[in-house]
Image (cartoon, rainbow, N blue to C red; front, side):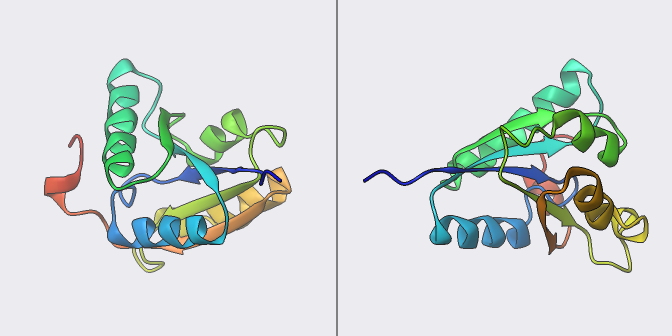
Amino acid sequence: MSTRTSKILVVANRTALSAGLEEALTERVRRSACEFTLLVPLGRSPEAQRTAEEMALQLRAAGFEINGRSGDTDPMCAVIEEWNPAEYDEIIVSTLPAWKSRWMRSGLPQRIERHTGALVRHIEAREAPAAKTAAA
């Protein structure tokens, strides 16, 4: 009997390498087998793609099955362009604490849920330490 692997889209930027997101991904893996795609809304330049891949590489080093992709600088547009219900089972949105997060002030997790119809989980994490980030 084989178990299906869940495909999860993770939307993050400044919190992509945070301990809070790492803990949330670890908890998600404990529940069932899953693969992640880290979507970082840094734009579509080769440099932005390299940054997303480097962030994913650091998460792979922590034991996650994850690929990195950069997307539109507007996180909602990035999700709309990437989301495909045939490809992903759920979405995790990682933000800074609500008082500091533009994504939370704009209601990003709720807007993504309304637009995609997907199960959207919100993770509130602190910004990753500067030494861990792949690029400035």
